[in-house]
Image (cartoon, rainbow, N blue to C red; front, side, top):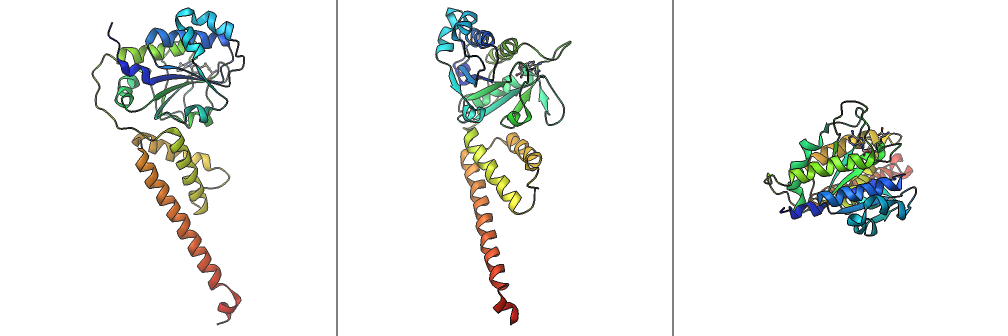
Length: 257
Ligand code: SAH
């Protein structure tokens, strides 16, 4: 079978998995479906023997070559497009699409970007804080009991990506800003919006979520992130200059005039 080489741009990211067998079974699914590799964040029980047993010798190279990080933000730093997977809906978890609705569209990014599919831990799933990094959320539709076993969820989504790899690409998207570039930009925007009292310092994340959603939809490039950073720095400089002027005009000397 001729396999689409772009499948190698897709990586499965397991955030804080608890059960080593699920890591092994995920590696096997990645191998079966021809994806790029496995990234694991803070595994609770990094028992290699248990992982390798479920991976079988065919996917052992994925376990031996998997990248391990202590923090999700760091693990996602170099990815240009990030999909979050969740069994839970509602609240900030919208809009949610099915893997089939999303998979074909991902190939437009794959030529120029590394794509991460993020999975949560067996007990907690992904928290709202962790979902922040994602451009899009997907939920596997089920008849009953919304939550799948972690490795089975990895398989279903990997399979949908594999099937979509046979469809002709809709268009080719340019290289997008990496997660690291975006996170620095969101930090700066948050800082400025607090300074100009547009958002409350007590609960900035609620507002920032709307801003993140809006930018995720656009898919910013590196130079566009630099432009927004430049605007933020100019606002900051302008505010500081004005603040200084105000102080000067309020000095007792001037007030007495
Ligand atoms: N109790 C958790 C479920 C965790 S299942 C919760 O309520 O969120 C472990 C992981 O498998 C989830 O974080 C998600 O990444 C994936 N998963 C399980 N069921 C899924 C579904 N129906 N759709 C998409 N991903 C799912």
